[in-house]
Length: 274
Image 1 (cartoon, rainbow, N blue to C red):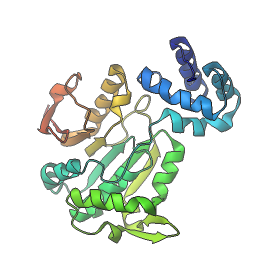
Image 2 (image 1 turned 30 degrees about the vertical axis):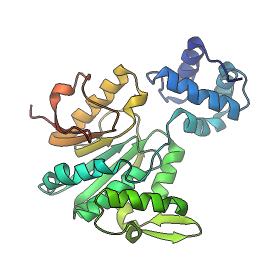
Image 3 (image 1 turned 90 degrees about the horizontal axis):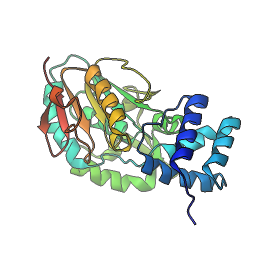
């Protein structure tokens, strides 16, 4: 029988996580959180969320593993290939006009999107002038992202995605295979900076020409969505670009009027002039 979680239990649990560890999930969509917390309760053998809360408060050792349940780790390289085709057509030509580039992958999870963006920039002749900031709140996911090591069994799927995304080379040119894993090259890693950053509590840290935050906002309530979009707007230079996930939109945001939709199907926007 699935664990039952009341709204009161959820509220108290999220407050406890915030007060104890400063991870703020209080503005995440409740239904999605409850589903993931039920899985966590099974993992930690807790019959109630209150029992799990007690462990969170008194056992520092479980918070990193718990974050794997509280954050969504579903990602892949060149996910939604049409998005990357949209970047090639609408964004890359204008990025060529900048002498140096800063790009932000917000909510990077285990890093596949950040490495994909690095490969895209390399193929477009832009990587050498670029720094990609890849951020997340999950420190274990960031360790995986920074290592750039993924199961070799996934490379066939990633290679198809890369080809469908308009890849101009072979994906295998960018990694070395050994012991059932693929390790992506240092020449890419030199342009990647992985860091802890929360869209719920942290501030802008640099001016960007491009921000990609895909399949993250769907887990936020409206208030937190507006906060995150406000960060992206503040971070972007005039004329900078924002990419969202296929099920996300600026349509009902208070920031909608500050962006121009340049590729509707691919959810790519450009910051409007003041």
